[in-house]
Image (cartoon, rainbow over all chains, first blue to last red; front, side, top):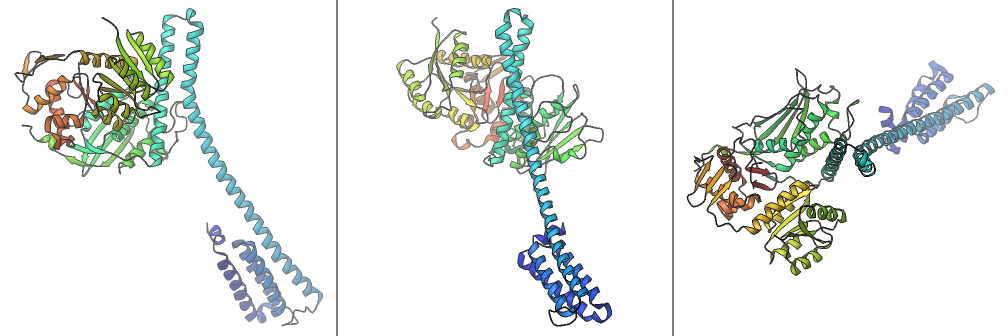
Length: 359
Length: 228
């Protein structure tokens, strides 16, 4: 992480740090020249340039390489305080120094470019993968019912004399079910885009949640394979919430529970009155969620690996969208005895008018 | 008896075709209009028994058509709308629409709504006693019996039930109910409505949690009708 951040420093900062460190190390070596000798000093300076190369962009590194080689020549290599070099060995050392410092600079900058390219490519691949999954799941979700409708209609119109009455009815009911599925998916996509556009404003009004839950239960597909239990809570006050949002939240949660838990396993709803809030708890007796997924499931298009076909990965993200649009929060946990528990908290005014006797 | 005439105003050819077939096969005479303007002209020329009006028309909005028609046409107008447009629906109902259906709708439901709307056109009820399901509502004596057992209703509960009963089969918006029962000043006090509908249900329904007489149309209002 640190390595990236030094490279993102402003250019002037990079130049200053490079030059100051070259000067600092050079002065240190100059003071210790009597002890370490000028050849070791050259190595220490080379080391400094290498560290700078690892940290900064190519230009400050090149400048450090150049300036340090001049300093080496002028202050360290005999004859001192001239740019002349006395013997062939020192001359060779100076050129080697210069070459290694530059190679260092060029190599590290190349490595860095390669790194950046890899990073960009990975990011791009991730985006592409996300969109491919998204489009695949969407086109699957939309095309399956369309294929069902077209196929069933073809069969009905072309081979109707050969079809038994029972088969004809099955095809018709498949067309109906496909229509419902399409309708649901289009509804989900519309809700999602409304939520994302931020144009959806809650319209809060007094709401009898007992009544709302029962009307949602009526709207759920009546497959009778999942008992959904709700006992009206007679002591519940009226809550000031957006009826439509709350209905969508409940519908999607229940639909999800019914869709992904084994047949016959019960789903339970509880509504409670928190302090200044309405608490909705939907729990099922299914397999629950893996721990790593309890946050991910609310992400758009996220689906658990190996989850059964059907479903676009939108339902729960829409739930979260509506909960957040109401200023509330949602939490998913696994119950100790198994099954998922969704807990929703929506801030809401309450009214106990319903506890008053009417005249 | 001659066939009842229905005018369909919808810009979608597929929907027009579908409605034409569904309605004609159920013994209605069907007229079709593509645009609001055409529809209004057709109603003026030859007033039908009922108008099915798509609220999302291209030339002028269904709300305008509704306004134009309601200034002189007093038979039933059923609005066809898309889902999640409760505010649209409520404003259409408050501006004189008889009923509404959201697309996609089932034909059986459409036919039921049409029958109920046409029935209301024809019967200007002067009856003071209304029978619905197991309920017998005596408007003059302000008495309600369920399975011939007298129910004890408060005065407000009775007013509410009577209003519902006079509009059987029809969806009544929150604002309408509040205005009629409590007065204009209470039009936004939906909490009163929630409370009294709740207590009325406890008295007239077999199971107040699964209401059959007073059903909730969420975001819109309540509908009172025969328990099915």
